[in-house]
Length: 434
Image (cartoon, rainbow, N blue to C red; front, side, top):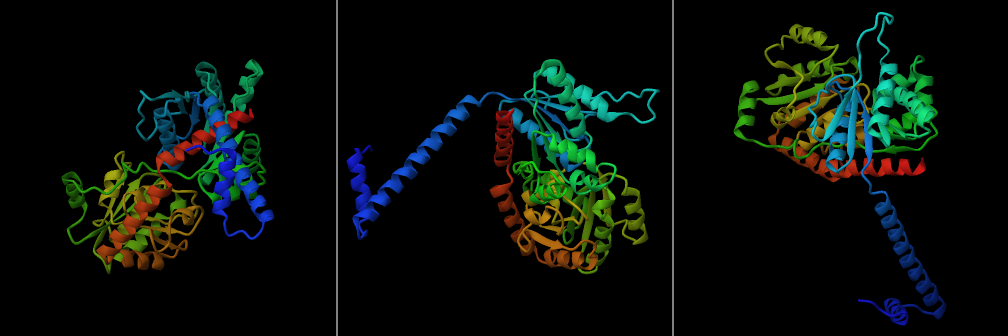
């Protein structure tokens, strides 16, 4: 219903009947009018900008193809943006670990043919040449680099090459994931180059507040947008069909619990702490340990399992494309790394209603609610890891309660609808500045 100006004043007066003097009433009326006009103006401006810039974006994603959070995250975001109608291209040096719908997203492979003149293949230069080629051929609007090295360097070179030949300025957004900023960026060999490429990025995002703070400590003065990882809550969920029940029986008896870990088996993941804790847990709770992934520490962990006489209780499952099935049979997920950004594996576990035990490092405390979705422990404290695990696994009700709370956290904060929209808005914001 519309009111005349005087009718509007009358309504305001009625609303403020308890006023004691005319001066207060007049001030109140003008403040109300100012708020209403400001809101209307802001909404109108937002609507105009949204209308003008609701064009289909041509986006290039550059990422690592192997099993790891940065590559999986980049490919997931790229796919969802393609579903939203954007023209999306992924630039990688080999077929990505996670399957990609190539009807939605186009893959451009960096040539890594060996040249006799090079002892070590110059991936940074080859990537720069491929990025420049794709920008020109596909008329890209923006490049999003996931993981600072080496692709932020490659993208910077590609941007300069494109500009020198076309005078077109293609913005580069660098997304920080973890090791690239909390470890590599502090090494003498890489510190200055990472700082340089971040300062020369047109936008920077990070998957946790911790990583943004690390970048600031490095001397980065640019604004850093924190956009957390997300998880496909429809794919990663608790379901108990016959196939899942059969899968669980492949590893555990009815009275046994299943502990799960998934990673790229690097030293930083401290999988040996999980194995040592598992030996203690088994003394109190019948259980099995499933280790998913592959990497440089795998043979060492296998030897440790043999030394501790745990071979018949620990399963090395390698890389698993349908990893959601293993979350669906797990009772507890463990990630006890010495450093982390915002681990995607933790969000996948939480979405699957699996309680989490994780170390109080990096961005983990930003996503794990201690005592509610699981427990936080100190790095290397094997006794505490075991104690907290026993506390959860001893009671089915505890597993269910923590799992339900974990799922609710994911649905409220870490869904693709929320996170992908943030990336889309951020890309548009960066393009406005160019």
